[in-house]
Length: 238
Image 1: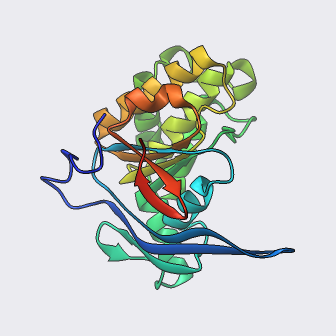
Image 2: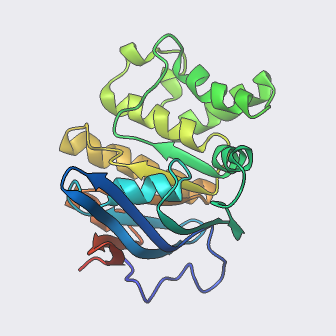
């Protein structure tokens, strides 16, 4: 695991994702809640960064803002050098579709479709022809150890297998960065480690960066570096 100051990825490349002075406030019955206060982070190609912290610490708020799913109270988000928050909705949607993949605690697979078709569909939405999308889906699912499950529907698969399909789906359009929010939070410890190893291996194979929010401390050894949200800012996890 690398620390904040010895990131081997930073030496040879520009960040695929940069967050600058990000703030996120929520209005509650008791007043204003400051979740993020001037948060900054850079994520580099092929790098797996762990975002550790308990529920309510701001992990999901950071992922949603950095992934262009929500508009923060203030700050800037750069994807491959392009500032995104000032762009029109249509352009932000395009960048989110082309450059960012998402993995959640629950897989959200389409239950009436097979594993391979769940991975084909986002590619077709991006304009990839069906035959080409199917070849790519089969390749990714095979890398995830699911060569024998291509035609199985989610209900015919284990929880760990379903989550591996979700990971393949997230990476199908070759994004620059994966945002993973508690990707193994719904799995038992043994399955959790297997699934995360699959995610880690796939980011290496495809040279895709990942920002992984989790409270599972057993996943720390997989990370290139680990950060946390403390007092609304992103700091090295120690």
